[in-house]
Length: 133
Image (cartoon, rainbow, N blue to C red; front, side):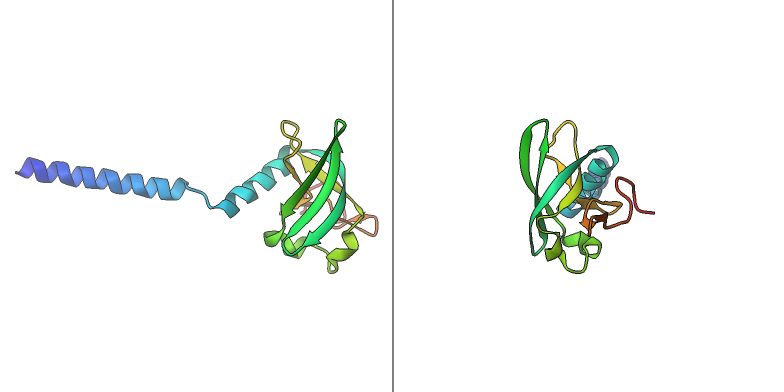
């Protein structure tokens, strides 16, 4: 009987530890998106884009890589403070973007550490292609 109680206790602790590990490892979608943005920022190549539209929490843009034109959007809900005061002024204007060399469809116009948005011909963060301080 005591062996059964001991085995049950050990099993219960193992299950509890497993659940704890799974919950700690599982990432929320917004965390995955932030990691994606930061990865593209760190390892991406620079290119030029044209901003097509800005709706609610999304910015739509177009760019070409090796002769292929991509139309993409980026969720900007967590980056609103990086958008200039009147975002409608950006529509139709050029911007810098970063894209993954392995998957050019994986691109960003801005992230927590960098912005390719240009206001009046100048980058929104003051420095093209560099990270924010």
